[in-house]
Length: 546
Image (cartoon, rainbow, N blue to C red):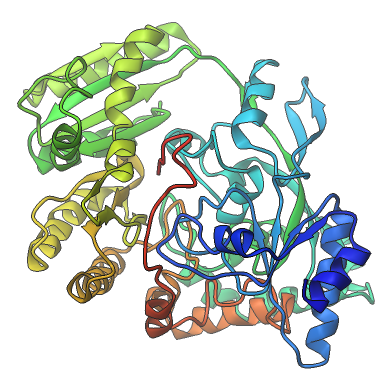
């Protein structure tokens, strides 16, 4: 072991590891990057995290930077769970439900708890968290907070941020704070603290007050946006103040979340799922626009395109055989309602079927769980596409998560299809959350080949330019990580970009918390971090999903 590993092991309750195979394992997440850590720590409690942070802070005070990266299950597709210093791995020990109030629906958990297991626990009490990711069965709640994850039901219920009541956070100097909504009076008490926590409150409050108009006019009008830091929801007009929105989605670059207090909703498996076959973008856009005007929003509006269906058909001809007939339509739209009133649910379903009929579109309606599963199987067929490789070419998460105003979805799909043609990629597989203007695209490329690398970065630049020009964000439900960092300045402009850099400096003056994630990584640096062999072998127990 190194001297640092020996020192940490002496002072921590949890385990410290530096073996070559462990370092190799944690050099990868679900992104295209490879960054071997120097030390792996499995904390047993919050105090272990605090000690690691304090140790790194003290080294930094002596001009030696030894960074810290918090990691859940490594499902991050942007490189946010990778780091060259200490990787703190949560699921081994910090995976417990600490409190559960079945009456209020509030639950307190440790950050390393598996999202799926938490959901199962809540469902036994008639509760659930609607903002669950596609990776629910193998991701952690801490990771969901770190990325402000959304999912299929976020069209109605919003991202995970909507359900967070408070967080316990280990700061870069090892102090532990609890973030929650504060009144004016409570804020004034925080501003008077002599600790690092007080310094953070004073600095962030001053930053917001001095840039109030800039912040107000720069907010993107989108259903989802995880690019940069959410400075927009920290201080409200009534004077209330909450650091929680800054921490959520920050990818552990501002602090390390140890405990999470979450609210939940009443759970009912009863819903109606409608599949609509659509053969042109105009009709697709029209249906989405009409659904988003409705007072009774569906809980989900999902889409898959013909390119994805044909790719799955080629990989496994029998997978969709009993669920979907050939020839495939250009698009399949999946609309799900979970309205508790049976009468109201039937009413909105009837209205949607009338709309589809006026457009001459085929529909299929299912309410029985087993029959709904046949439609869900089609919607989730992207897992087959993600897990398959064509020789050494693989589906790569490089332009996997953009969001535009929902009214611009058809334009986005049309324009990105043309971009693919420019780089000689004929088949484009698309799936995602159509109602929110949030889609996923993973082109099949081999990054060991110079030509494919050039295609990848041409796609990155042209696609993100397109998204930004349409008023969108480059990070819809995942996050920036390292992958999208070079494009954030273009998204926000110099003023907001520099303001967000100041936020990072306030929380992390020595830049020890996940450096290179979200800010200050160049495109050339990204190219040097690309793994020689991209694969999702760490996920195959479950099926990789996005």
